Amino acid sequence: MSETTLDKELDALKADFAILREEIASLAASVKNFDGTKAAGNHSGGARATTGEAGPDNGGEGHGVFAEVWHKFDSSRIQGEKVIKGLAAEVEQYPLVSVMAAFGLGYIIAKLWFQESKH
Image 1 (tube, one colour):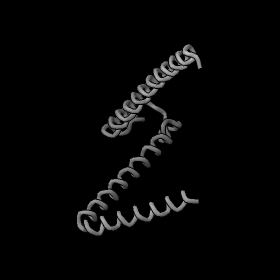
Image 2 (image 1 turned 45 degrees about the horizontal axis):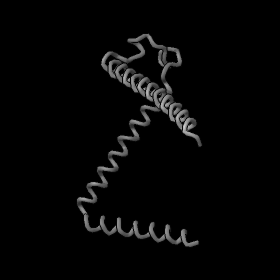
Image 3 (image 1 turned 180 degrees about the vertical axis):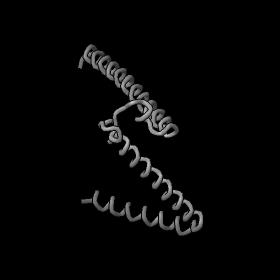
Image 4 (image 1 turned 30 degrees about the vertical axis):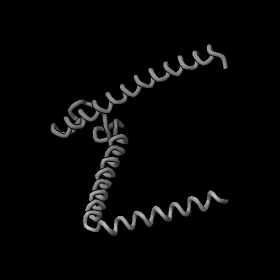
């Protein structure tokens, strides 16, 4: 490939990254704004009621699906943190067993991996 072709592709890539950077900044600002609206709504009886935004409770569509997904994500994150804390407590309580289990699991994975690569 010639030098000019590479320069053109590099310029196009730089432009794409600039657009992507702007879109991510816009998305982050939207999420921050939504989170701020949600927090303000929790203190004043609901964001939809205070902002006049149509929602499922107010007879419109609004952000009901997004709120539901956000709630499920939040509950999944909390449940994951509980599982991790429980595992950490188990490792602290039984360190030798945990090391042996990790070694055994690693050994089994290695055996399976290298057995398939021989075929």
